[in-house]
Length: 134
Length: 382
Image (cartoon, rainbow over all chains, first blue to last red; front, side):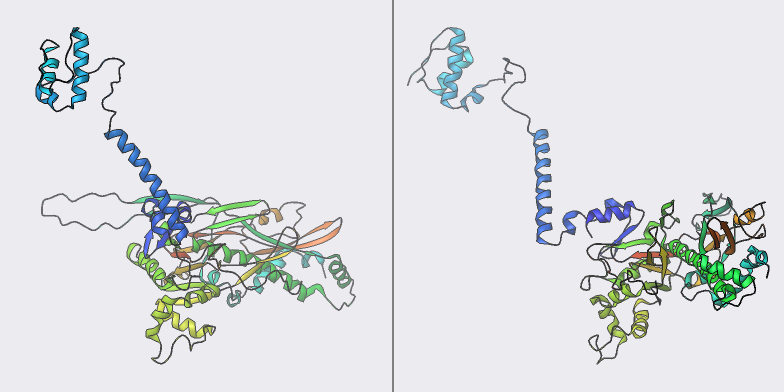
């Protein structure tokens, strides 16, 4: 007897006797996977469960992983508070890019080959500190 | 011989009653024999009290006792259907009747032998329908669709946990557990509803499937001699197997299988079992003959009123309070015909909802269903 037939019996005002247990409510029926006997039924049940898991995972991801790094509003970037320590954690290339932006804004120049420490000082000062080369 | 007196409704009904000897209810109408037939009227109000007995509390001196709901009284009205069938006399038979009236000796006299047989068949026809309805009340469901009358899934109020469908049909000899299934149903009746089912009514086909299961044979082992196994037993020995099964199931076992015949609308004959072969009924023998458990409400037949009206097609007059089954004759002139009728008016009533349990032990059709091996399309004596 498959689950659909069991549901029909209960909906018709009866009950189902399954493995010694008398079931009168649909929510108490065993799952389709639990009732699967043949290899074909098991395969089908496994596929249905897999699809359910994928759909649930998708919902979970949407709730717990909001889209980071990009702003919802065009053009405006929410700035984080920059400290020497946070800038020193960035890579050289990233620091050079930031320094270029600062130099452009301040209409100054800087040495892209300078040390990270110099570039950090340049960025934090807004383009006023001269570069130092080793 | 006065044809009016011969065909009068009073005489025909008296003949029908005479043929109905107390001991003479058809042997296969077991359920009708155990069910009281109770006079009833249309719109009769039947009050049913439903509720549980609540255990008393311990109350200290000077303290108030708890007040609980008294249960529920529900009022139900019974509308009684007619149970009716007729037999038309052929013109040949009518001519024989005429010959008898004219004093001519005829070989095949319509009266008394042939008429007795006609009337008796009509009486039994009504009783067969009463039997079918009583069995439906015990199974907790009734459906009928014929001659413009449609009744679908008439519910007698049986609790859902007494209308049980087994997940593993008894047609599966390896995995089915008939003994456990019956035990679960018995326990529900005893513990939850306070009624002990000590009788099991089962069709022979279903019985044969039950005793062929591995579970039954394993549990029957304790009742057999050490050097005897099921290999040595003749499973077709009904009486021996029934005695063994009564020990295993722990209740009286009644093998059913009685059938009735019906004429279909296309004129062909059909046959059906009173109790479907995939249904097993559990009941208590203490309920036999107890009108407070299940009874058959027997109403006054409407034909009694019709027979007392002027120019009634019914020959003669019935008492106005006549309850079925009664018999009477009607006649037509063009073409000439006369018909004998048997009629009753009633329906089964289930007063105690937990009176019986019903197990569906195999699907109605398809995989796992019980196949009827007898060909009922081959009609003998047609």
